[in-house]
Length: 141
Image 1 (cartoon, rainbow, N blue to C red):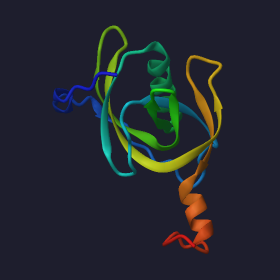
Image 2: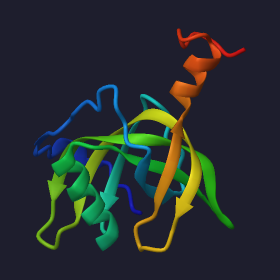
Image 3: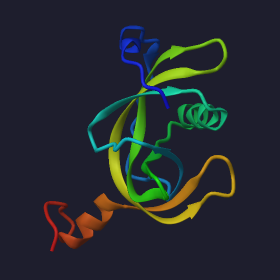
């Protein structure tokens, strides 16, 4: 993935959406050599066909995708969901520059890598943290 900084100045429109309380437990995964943290913005240049389709689906369904750190021998088992805040630029060949923001950390329970676009069955860590903290989410026991 190639990241470009100047596209922030060419915004097409805001497409931000909230996932609400319910989040899917099986999500599309996007391995990358970067770590996304909750609340952190991350610009991405999307050019591979599988990820162009994933972004299109996420925009249509108003859903998030999971970002995982790509490692030399696989991927990290903990990642963060990414919400697409804006499509900054669309290219005639279907590539696009998007701005994402990290939302909820998750742990991959099962990895589905049989298709070009990986998916993962995930446990959201905010849910685990709230359960361990007695429901208030302010700490771990």
